[in-house]
Image (cartoon, rainbow over all chains, first blue to last red; front, side):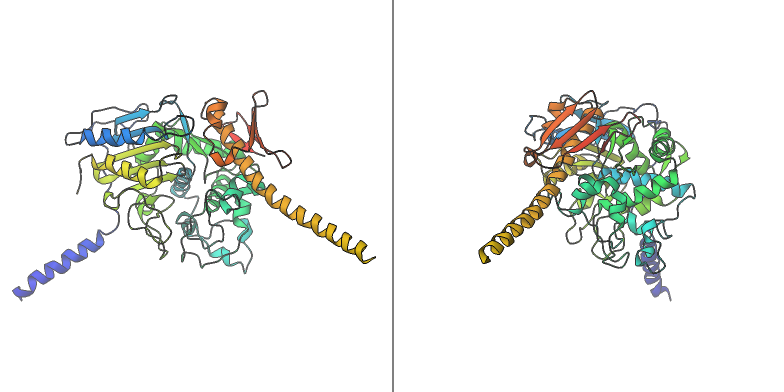
Length: 377
Length: 100
């Protein structure tokens, strides 16, 4: 029997390993370090940080310019241990400048969904409450809010190319169809069974945005108040603006605005597992759900309206280095809010991509991340 | 007689074809004009930047869009002569610019 003991221990070890599979732990706010509800603390980068690598990557990011002579990178902020350790703005921008999200706004809408779930007002595994899908035989009735968050609804409303005026996303946001973005996105056919196929869809976030706005109630004013009271105010965010389509659906898929410091506040809420200064704002396990790729076989790097590092599925684009264990809000033009739990690190980069491209941007941001020491294995 | 009917048919084909082409191009212009109007309006009122700075952030393929700012009306229009115009209107209710 003793000869089987090592095997038994190995089996127990494997079982424990399996139980721990999935996203790693999230770092707590360092003791005695206040949450930045009133103001961000600032500090030197921690011992062990490769300052020259950090500076070289930042300099590189600010060296790409658009036609107007403005750097593509307009804001670059790094917070470690809940304190700002690096912050730089292009000329003409500063810590009071608001930056638009493009698709990073999808993650803000996810946070508002989380607040509704936390308050017991939405169930992500129930059929999504979408008026266009309520027919008794309508196959879209099976689509859940979880499917919408994981971008695997199976609906025929994938974005298409960003520079194609005929693409679904271009018509959704800027064409005649933009008047009622959620209606346009919802009135499409199901082309895959829900949960079976990942496809990036701004229209999907517009459907979610309408669900959130209806639950908030009170039209535009109600939605503005809901976002402010349930999410922005508890975090000390004062710059958040959501824009709307002509019928009053918030443009959750593309147009949220915040300062770099406020984008970082939202990022910190996720890095702290949805608990802000002792107050739980998201359901238990929500950030784990956020960081876990949805189950569609062609998805490797998309969690719940957040991107995660890993091996992209076919047609998916890359994020920060796969070794970095990051999860991120990403938006067109190179808007990135990246959370790196193993380094207790937060990187915010906002601006344009007139000259720099995504692979180069990802490489520079990964270089910044690797300049910081690990705080957990 | 045959020539007359052929001419009428040819004219009809030309008109319908022209209308289809116009509608196709107009749909593309609407998207470009809408993008330009929305981006510049939001950039001015939420980004708090100058019209020229905001205009220069638009990608080169939108250079043909005429973008105009009406400071009194707090709106930005995007258009191409002969095609549909789009207007983005700022509102101070805290909801930024809306495309109409």
